[in-house]
Length: 45
Image 1 (tube, helix red, strand yellow):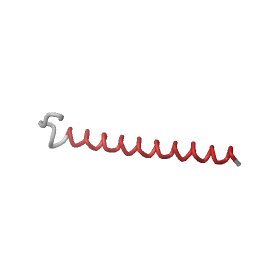
Image 2 (spheres, helix red, strand yellow):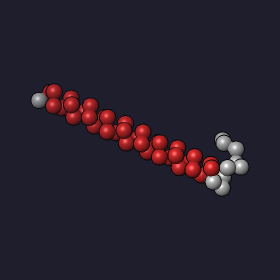
Image 3 (tube, helix red, strand yellow):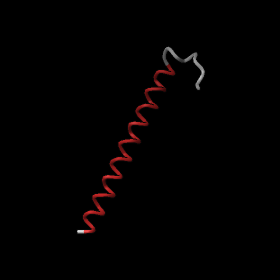
Image 4 (cartoon, one colour):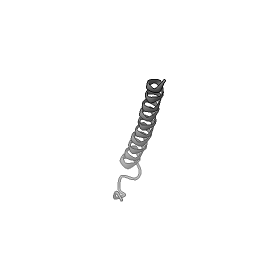
């Protein structure tokens, strides 16, 4: 039973990290798209 609980904890942590990473990458990609567009003249903060 302990192994199963441990596996669940590890997998849930992995999914959480994966979700946060993909969300971060999505925001970065979105910001880059904006940068190429109308905000290309604005210097990065």
